[in-house]
Length: 442
Image 1 (cartoon, rainbow, N blue to C red):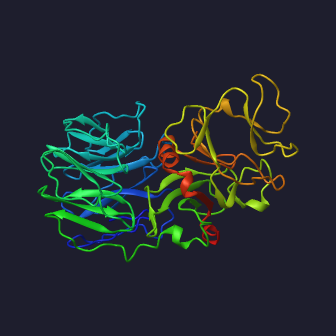
Image 2: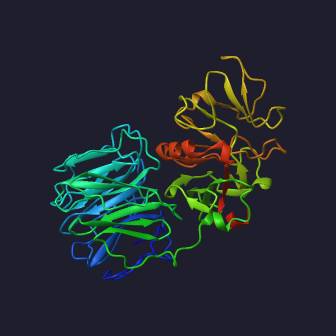
Image 3: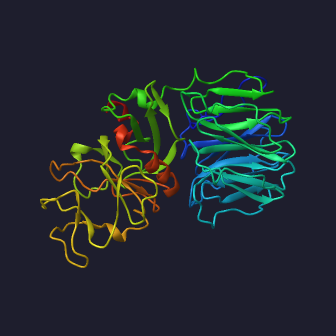
């Protein structure tokens, strides 16, 4: 198993051949793939950087390219002479003897791609989205999907049967869905998990499978044998380390490596009455162009993200219709502004004026209805509300548009939709944002 910091954990006859724990990574590790003889493995980061250990051979990476969407998975070719990488938009990248058979990179997906599996001869592959939609390429055969079902939790991974005649899908609650000649051997769908399931793999004969949770817990079914887990080696949930959650039952935590970083990671947690549990896998986020400052030290327009613990605003907004949020939702129309003028009596609030008229406030106030790329749907971070001086305004959780923000937190839109749809005002959600050095003090 591999953690997001590149630490590798080995169990049974799997041998530790090295890892990246302690290394200064540009982006978190998101997946791994073993070589055919088990004598090595490949690790891949969300920026497409590839790292090899043991008899795994480096065939190239996309770590120096600017990607439209982050890498979310990889699989090796049967002989280990190459590998496929897949991004959350379904873009596929091939290296070594891996052959490109197509992708969904040019399609508009309902939900992001979360995993892939190659056919036994490497002549094709399946991609799976978080709603369980399955896409086939090359000699991969479609055996069904959950794309038309309403799932309790999103799909997070897949595994193919040894002959390619079927596949399993796994959801973050451990629910298992079988297609083709994949055999159901049990699931964790009815169990209260400490942490979400993030991946699965099948046994060599297809008679069983193993699930792994984000805390390193391992669950075995069929002829899969339990050899241990990493739960004792993984750090406690980040939410349990916060000084306060201010009574929230849902927590979004956004943390960055340091105070000048514009790259961050977003975590989601929920307290179901028995304790906190992670909801989605960590998501790549982007913060202010000038890094981070304590909220009380900020000034309007300084381009920093405000460190602190904040509520989620009572209304969500967007240029598009409500995508399924549980909050009160306002679809933006001509004349909808956010007042960002520190001298205005309505500073740092939503305001509507007659379409085509000049608002009574100035500054860098935003014409929200014109920002369809950033605000197809978004949530408000209740920073400086009500205003306590010109500390800044319009701090939103919104869609990525490429590059850093003016202080907001942005996510790829498919990830943003997952978060916005999950947030429930009845559970008093809050968001903690800041670099690693201070996040636990909130």
